[in-house]
Image 1 (cartoon, rainbow, N blue to C red):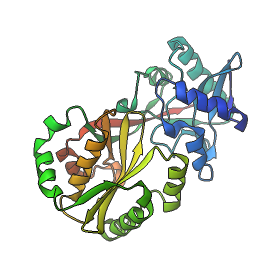
Image 2: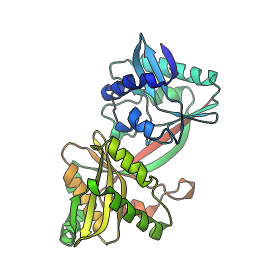
Image 3: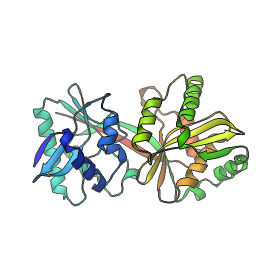
Image 4: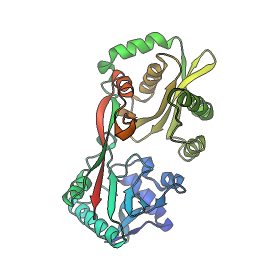
Length: 306
């Protein structure tokens, strides 16, 4: 078994592994990671056995910290399901030894939330804990379970349907620029802040992953009043941004998202609510998510000191 730093010659093997791993996600592909290439010092790892890529980890270097990966929502071990637990144990051991020898003093990993997992895959975290990894950070995310949505929030659906007549709601992937500019204006006026992504970032991602980036727009008459920017995962739809300038419009936009993706998807991830200083929860944001049927999930990061 050989562990080394990722090289460009590994790209095809990496992409093939993501396609067949137990818990695939487009954010784990090299295409997505390369979108971040000017922002982070890539230090991804690959694991080969008999010339076959059996595991990979997207990561970067931050001084003496090996971080998997600050530019991603999660960065679990990418590994095919056919390999046994004992091999995962060996991989974790060898990764730790490799990073020590490379001069790192610490590793931080972000665990894939359960709702994104096609198959159980906690052996990676189990062995990390065995080697002394401790909880580094936890965030509270909220997701709408699509199977039970109508039973969970009948009142929200009724309110949304009553107000739906006031709005025109439609998919608007081709109007990303207009939506972004309105969102940017709303965030500046309401919160004195800017979106995490630039418009150039989102346009680049939409070009790289046209089937993974979608938008839903809300109009009053012909005037754009709000929208949702979505990242489409294998079984989860992530609300990357939601914004509106009209009462009830955000609820109606979420209802439209549910209607579009109820078939073939398990959750709509509304994102974390830890948006205040010191990782504190923004209860106003959390209340909006909860009243729309959102249920709590924990997003965890772990730290291991060498």
